[in-house]
Amino acid sequence: MARFKFRLQKVLKVREIQEEQSKFRWAQEERLAHEERAKLARLKEHEQKVKEFGYGQGEILLRQAMYQYLESLDRKVQSQTLRVAQQEAAAREAKTQWLKARQERKKVSLLRERQYAAFVQEELSKEQKVLDDMRSRVLS
Image (cartoon, rainbow, N blue to C red; front, side, top):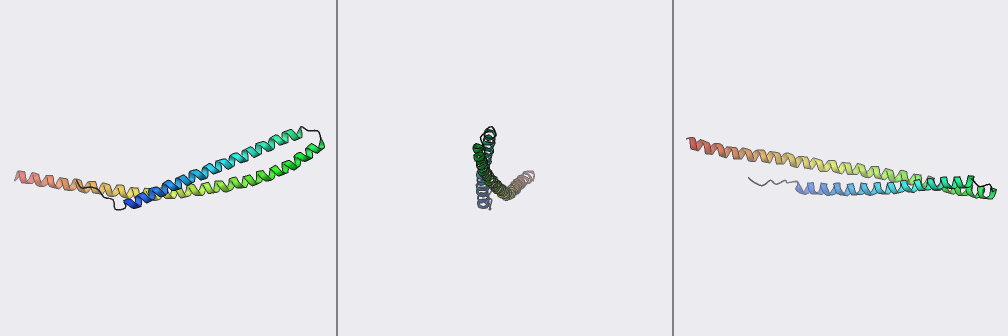
């Protein structure tokens, strides 16, 4: 049996590499988005603790300081919320790119599988032809 040679093997290899790179990028973006969400959660938790502490105080100066600090925390929370949204958008874009790369690799892989199936069928056909010729020579 002859050896199967896929002419687009290099293209397939490039598509596999592109898929791996885009998958890695998506994983990185997801990790960064997770970190940003964790920062936001920590800020909100801290804000809640400050509120609990501040509302327990009877002194007006402490409450005024708490309100100023809460305003500052609120700006940080808003800023972090924006960062989370941006990072999640980047993660979605990276996932889209990965899915496109995976689809492109699958197209070439499917082409390879079809060509290999056709190759095997052709080889089996040749083998059957040889066997038929041998049988006809023996019978004649």
